[in-house]
Image (cartoon, rainbow, N blue to C red; front, side, top):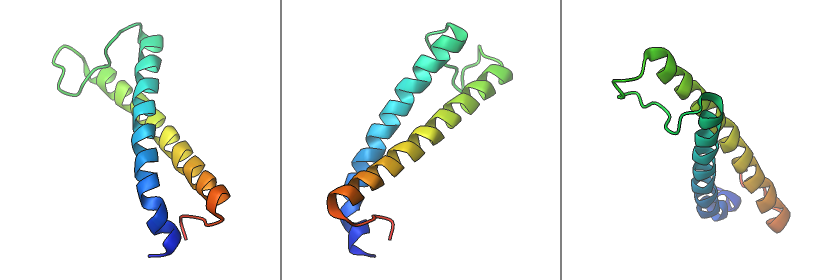
Length: 89
């Protein structure tokens, strides 16, 4: 493992947690905006149908993937600017 990866690992973990929290907030706001419901359906919610549950999962997955990529890339770029080392190599 190269030095950049080793140094970046704890930073990347913090960035990942913050990104996950941001993605959750974005999803909750997006779901409320789209459906006018406060709570998104859960897979085990017996009062919600398949379509609603799968739609919620698709929206949540898309938001998570975009936020995850953005925060990981942003963290790597910021790390490189600060240290001159790209954390992926």
